[in-house]
Length: 287
Length: 259
Image (cartoon, rainbow over all chains, first blue to last red; front, top):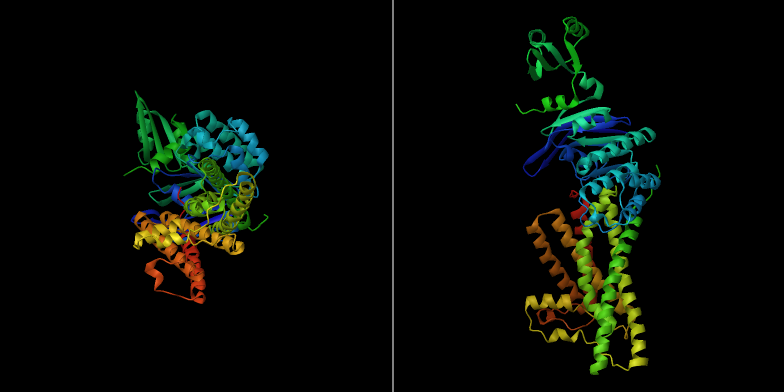
C-alpha cells in the first residue's frame, strides 16, 4: 500500500484550506498527522477518503486515483467525530450493516472491543454519551481493518482510561494486521509513542514528514549551570528557556553532533531529548 | 482483495429500510381505514376502499422518503461506497418500492372488500377521484395542489394492471422529485434548493397533465385546449422522468460529503 499526494490544493469558496501539499506514505506504519486547529488536517484526510475532491493536484493510492474508485474507496476507512444523534440502530445492527460493505471487517474483534469499552449492545446509538460514541467510532475503525485506516481526532470525546485502551488495542492490532494508519491529533504528548512517522502541516501547508525518532533527535534540552548553558547554546536556535536559581534549562532546535554532545557532557551539562510536543509547539508557533 | 459489485447491496439495503417505513405508513393507513369502517358501520355511510385511501396518501409518503434519501449518501460514502453505487442502488430501491406499495395496497384492499361485502354489508363509494378536477376553479396554485392531492386515477376494478402501473408511476415520480429537491439542498445553498422545489412542482404538474391526456382523463381547464395525442404524451412522461433522474445523478456525482 502506498499513498502519494502531489501538489494538492483545496479551496472552499474564498478560503484556501490546503496549499500545494506533497507527501508520500509508504509502508504499513502508524502516521501521526499533527497540525494546529484549522491547519487543514481534516481537509487533507477528507480528500484522502474521497469525501471531497481536491481543487488541484493529484492523489493516488496504490497508483490509482481514489475518488469514485470503488476498489480503492472500499479499502479506505475514515473515522471522524461523527454525530450519531439520528442513529436509532443499536451497536450490533450498525456493525452488521458496516460488515456488508467492508470485506476485511472482523465481527469477533468488534465484539471483543465492545466488551473492552463496555458499550451497551442493545441501546440505540443516539442515546450514547459523547465518550461512548467516540468509542464506537474507534471500534468501527479498528475492526474494519481497512488497509488505509484514518482516525481524525475521534478520541477527543473519550476519557483518559478509554483512550488508553484505544492506544493499547491500536498497537496490538497494528502488529497483527499491519496497515497504513493515520492518526490526526493535537493530543501530541499523549500519543507520540504510537507514531512511526510524523507529518506536520501548518496553515494548509506541508511542514515536515519524518521518522519519529529522527524528528525528536532534532532537538535537545541542555540543563546545568547558567553561564555554562548560556555559553553552549548561544549559537543555537532556542525554543524554550527555564531558569531556577543558578540552574538553567534551554531547549534547542537543531541536531547536536557527537563532538558538541561530548563537549557539553565534559562541561558537566545534562543533555536530554526534547518531546514531540515541544517541537510541535515550536514549529507551528505564530511569528 | 475480493472485489464485488456494490450497488445491488445498496439497492437491497435501501429497499428494505424504506419498505420497513412503508409498512409503518400502510399500517397507519389501515388503522385509519378500520376506524372509518367502524364509523361508517355505525352511521350507515359508505367508505372509500383501502386502495383509494392509500392512493391519495402514498404520494406524500413517497415525497417524504425521497426527501430523506439523500441522507443515505454520507452513510454509504463513510462505508467506502462510491456515489455512483449509491445512486444506482437508490434508484433501483425506489423503483422496487414504487412497484411493491401498490401491490400491497391492492392485496389488503381486496381482502378488506371481501370481508366488508360478506360480513358487514357496507357499501363502497364509487371511485370518482378524477371528477373532482372539474369542481375546482382554475388557478395555478389550485392546479398544483390538485395535482399533488389527486393524481390521475384508474379504478383497479376496471383494469388492474393499468391501475397498478399508474399508481407506481405516480409514486415513483413523487419519490424522484423528493430526491431531486434534497440533492439540490445537499449540493447547493438554500436559494438553489428553493428553486428546485419550484422545478419539482412544475415537473409534477406536467407529468400529471401528460398522464391525464394519455388516458383521456379530465384535464384542468388551463391545459384543456392542449389536446396532445398519446404518441407525444407518453414519450413526454418518459423524457421528464429521465431528465429528473439525470439531474439527480449530476447533483450527486462529485458532491462533497458533509461531515
